[in-house]
Image (cartoon, rainbow, N blue to C red; front, side, top):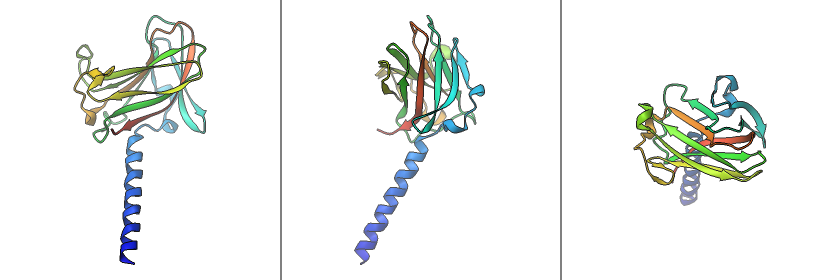
Length: 177
């Protein structure tokens, strides 16, 4: 009887702690965002849309020789992602051509010293995939020693798109591992 109780209690504690970890990884609630308050760059526009049963950020961009995208700033100056190994964004390419989608995680500091980590993923038309930024790495190589407890901005952008297009950012979350 006691062994059964302890086993059940252990399972409940494990489930509760995994729920807490999951809740901590979702540090941006798209449903609470105001699209008008999201900073856009290089001709991009954003909208908060319903996508597959959840709120998502739709990024619309022009053909460009630059990097159209958007920036999310931490509402209280910084996000503490110290319990995460990095940040991942799940993105769907609704454009007619293959698109390179980049995710950049930033600390405060002189932009000329590149206080960020970044990565890119290439998505075929209609494909969904993840852009994964591991703290301390950029494009899979050692990068800026980012302080995960002091993340100030998250940027999502596409690299020099050849045609007008749209991608949908389904989620941005911290991850462990």
